[in-house]
Amino acid sequence: MIKFCKYHFFLLCISFSLASCQTVGKLEKFPTMTFTHLSKIRLLVRDIKILELQKNQITPPYITHQFPISPAKATRRWAKDKLQIGGKKNTARLIIKIAEAKQIPLKIDKTFVGSFKNQQSDRYETEISAKLEILNEKKEIEAVVEAEAQHFKTVSEATSLSDRRKIWYNMIEVLMNEFNKEIDKNINNNFQRYLIK
Image (cartoon, rainbow, N blue to C red; front, side):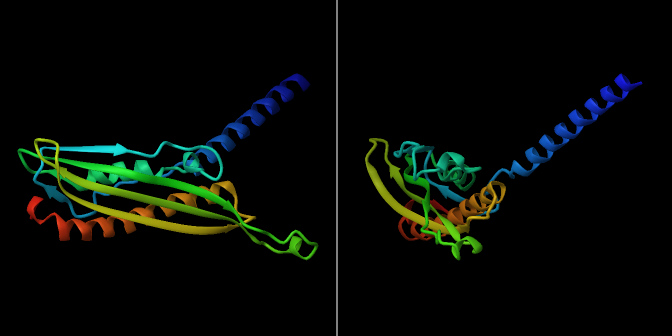
């Protein structure tokens, strides 16, 4: 009887452990970030290419690799959802120059009084800088627009990793919204010959 109870207790512990793992897993999942809700840009091109100039850095202060979605990946998705082919010649080339996220430790009060405060301990900085070019059949640049966006956020030392990841995801949403507004304006002002409306 004792062995039977121990066996069932053991199974119960495993069940609770698995349930806990599943709960943590659910907290870590984020919806796929898309930009299909944005107005499309139809270009007089037959091809769209994307290039990244910046290598993915994983040493401090860079924490891009920890984000649920990186600025570069979000920009690639933006291009896929937003830019459309509408011509029989020319090439559109999106060059991602800067796509990064940094964690900057803030100075906190380490005195006895400071130990009773919930202080702002970290500043997160995200940035996107990119240019969109139109190249002719000879691979000469016919037109170019540039856009950049930055978004910053500070968090307290009590912020959990789970909550930080939610903040990071939201930061990329805000960052891409700002980038979209800037590049939209510049495309409308400078790409008149290559736009289909």
